[in-house]
Image: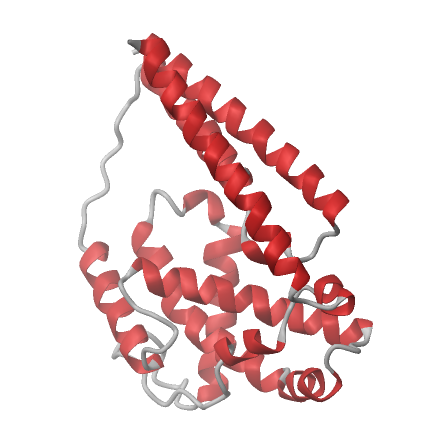
Length: 248
């Protein structure tokens, strides 16, 4: 029975990678060599949004003295970096802080749009003949926009939702989670082992999940290398899943 289930899993991933190869070939043929090398396309900029000062903030999110967007975004940048960079090891323990960090990210992202407004317009005017400096800044905004999308979708929102709605939802959830009592649970040796295994499996799934955006940046030879790399990650993931099943 175990062999049969393993065969089904392997067949599923084989089908997945065959589909990936064909979809990559189709997408690559629709783009010029310069566009593929650039990796970011004109239509991506539609997702960035436009700069607009955020005048709304829930009571208690900022000090009373922070009465302008400029002052709020400075605080938000510091809070965002503290939660997601300096104290990232505490994110799992203090989930309320993570949600609050998402609210601060909305202010941080909007300021980034303001600071890079000229770069975005230059990208539109010069595309696809883009200089290194413009390319670097656009890739930064693109990455931040992807993060913003993931954060919003985690709470049932989209990039099309109003920024005030997003901030309000983040803050309400933060206040709710902030009331929770934190308890320390001592894990057994077996539970620690399973926790470590789960972490390793999650990393393999993340590394073995190619996105269409990544695929479009490679030549056919590089694409084959990527597929081999993803195959390796998925095989390791399946192996660990089987070990977990046997050990349980």
